[in-house]
Image: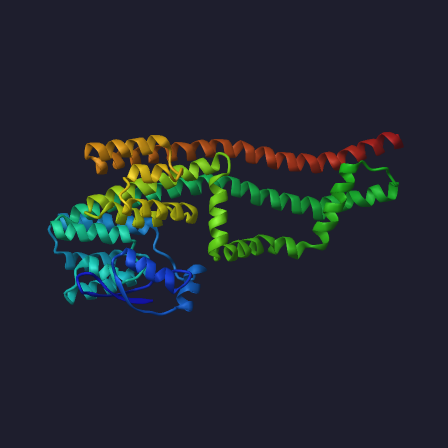
Length: 398
């Protein structure tokens, strides 16, 4: 938890998740805040890491922004509209944060200032967009634009969940079928083969060994998914390990391309929104790097920020990093030269979102038959390993 002073001289408090105090200071200075005090909050960090407290999702933010934009358009004062939204919000974490915002707004704070005091409860891109809407008198437009932004994020997440649902069901089914065959069916045939003293092929002997392993390590196999998940989460808690894994993910054939398209869509959309809100390119780049949710790309974008501060253009800075497609970089360069950077980045974001959705749909179409073939192949191996010795035994006895 930190306490800082803004350029305007206002006292600001909030929460930042970081590896150490130096990282907190760096993030505060990027926001042009002057740190006063920094306190370590282990309990909050642990609770959030393991999702004990329900998080605020893109769906929750989309519904909040959409409802608030509609209320403001109808002429309802912002404070009264905020009270109406609180009564309609179903997420307890968001409700609690909005209640704090409501009391601060009643006390004289602006909406963006009140949200900023809630730490990480509200994304920086939302706060900056609202701040711009307050200054320009177009708050309802800012909320409408953010509603569209979070809706697109939610839609892409739903497509990813849809892509993973069918293979997950097949995987669980395969595990149950394999457990049944290995623990119930195969041991019965092992007894028959042992009594007949049959000469078994290598694949049948392999199946018998696998069956013995299943029978003697049932508890371990049941706990294996949970143990794997906990180990993975533990590895991700270390910055260097997280950086390495995020870099490897981007290099996975086909899947890495899909992830890159999703990241490009998020990045370009957030940069366009922040530039339209009046932020500098460097500040927009710093905030937008967080929405990528990839430590490797965040690190590369930090390098781009350093180049921009030295006088380089956005297109040249991003081109040297080799993380976005040349088509995107060339379009940004045209936008810079023509003076229509914001409009060009918005068009790039539209294209990237369409490409990401098309790639996810194609991935779903490929994943379903591959999953069926894998499940069928495993079951076929078990059946053949049992049936072939039985057939030979039958022929021998006949």
